[in-house]
Image (tube, rainbow, N blue to C red; front, top):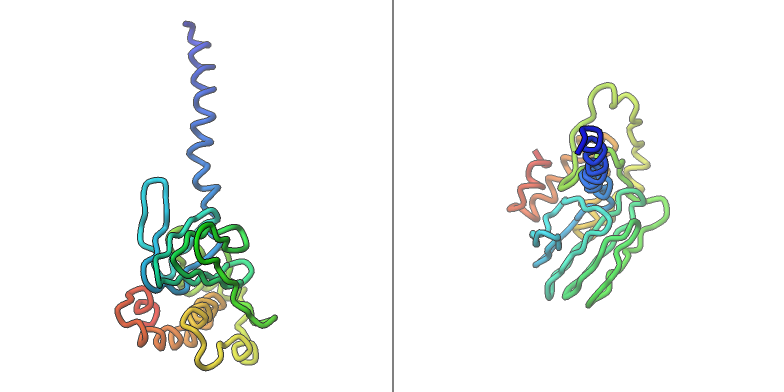
Length: 202
């Protein structure tokens, strides 16, 4: 076999390999964040399963196995839509909604128009969400929300835990750091053993 033939064969093999390596990154666009999980819920993967974590971000195509008497709440980053899925069930995350496969069907939570809590996609990373204050150059380009907007989007008294987590995430996202820390502090009182909330309350 000539050197040219070896090079051509190697090139043909390299292209599929590069595409295969790139594919996970292409598929890994995160579409939703876990804003509450109660009971047993697992992420189904080709390599196995892992327990679903609060504030974990998930790509489209993710399947969740939710146990008996368990519940998961999800916030869609782009639209601010919120879904609840109760067990026993198997559900899958589509690009803009949660679809049921087996068992109890997921439910979209009603949210008043204008009070949706959308997040910027550049803050969301695989396996978690980046919730740090913007660097000074970025901060200058993010207009602080007016008090009226904070009030309009603030969950009503007695709102579910998931709704209040979504609000805290939104406060972080728009740079309202003091308000966000106070929101996390109140949430931490309800879930003192959850380190992901405790870190944000500090």
